[in-house]
Length: 589
Image (cartoon, rainbow, N blue to C red; front, top):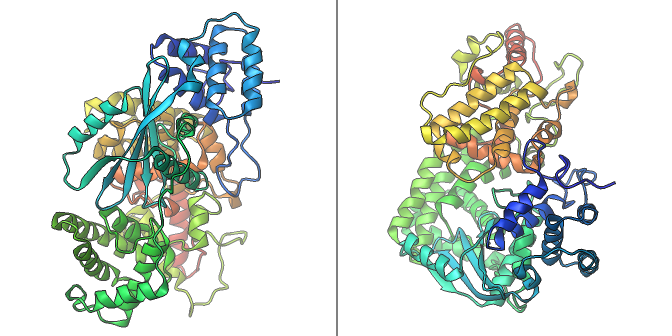
């Protein structure tokens, strides 16, 4: 038995929201095709069976595309006829198209003229917006319907993340208007906007979308992947034959010659030691084998990835070695920019990024953290919430350890101090329950009150139904801090449900509520309350945490204050501190 239009089980819908037929009626009330096509695209994206994690044994429960089409065919209404026609037009399944055509032939509903002409729509222009530092490109495609309507698809292809689709959207404007807006708004001599062959636009978008499809955690924005089926239809109109992005090939000899040129240059003054040369090899490894494959392409974004994530996660080495990386990076950035002729202002901005991220980098390499496969599992939400949750003894303590190999006591103290905000905060910590307090609106700009209020209502509902009053207070405090310090994140497009899920998930991670060894709540169960995909939430959480002034490391999440810790978590830390002082040696958690 399939779901019925308007039923709370329709993907992406909540019972409190308007039903599907009402959405279709509103879309048909617009004089442009995009309103209905957006709705159809979002429905198709929602019923996909792609897994949210490579560790998921089976696709998440929910209606299939076939069930969606069958349920709409069972309801003889003008709205379902229009939606069926749009779904069939966006799809590539000829069997489904014929089935829908037979259904519509038996109905007496007048559909918009443009729907019948979608098969004859023509792409007539494609453009690319690029920047000299090469972080990513905007590829745009303009389409014209036989009815005269036009739309433009815009795809942002991010090279830092592996040349994949990081975001995409479709607007109801001719591409010429969009190009004019881009030219007027850019005003940047380092940015270029030009026409590209349609076959080349297709190859670039198709390749980038294929990389996105196998990326975990999945990328999710306010418009992606909801617009993916519509984008696939647009791209399907383009001709084949493009080459797409060509990844540079850097053989071992090429890398050695590049390193030799650098160390022979004045930019490597004072960097001739063995550690410096090894660290340059690490940076060449990053540059050649990750991102776009160009070890001489450095931007503030690439610097952030290298220092805030890649080296701390990938390179297992002692602190004395790792601490030298920023100095090598500064010299190599200046060398590469000089060889490439990058404007000095952009070199300065990239060096400023090294200065900005070095303090966090130096703190991170001196802190316990997951590395290698453990970091990947933590990012995917698999395994313990804390990299040091290793003990499985009944009482959580383990005296069978080798003090010559590990200084467990210092490691445990470092974890606890980071969780509560330092040694003094750890010493003063108590386990009193968090009060049931109202949301504090102090310092939050008025223009984001409505948006923050939507997120707050969803956080409160989740804590009331899934967690408890202490978690509600912690979530309110975290949300208020983010809104106060980074209100701009609430001025952007984005789903309130996703933001609320990220806030509650962050509080849960900080409090180890997902500890399955002790019967904790599963991350999947928490996020199911919001209809959110597990893989998409860490990325959103990192954005919110960064805006709030917190360290954006979701794989080893710590909010740095007892204000966000519930009594159970604080009691565990208090008990552990007491045992450690008495000479017991706990397994860190």
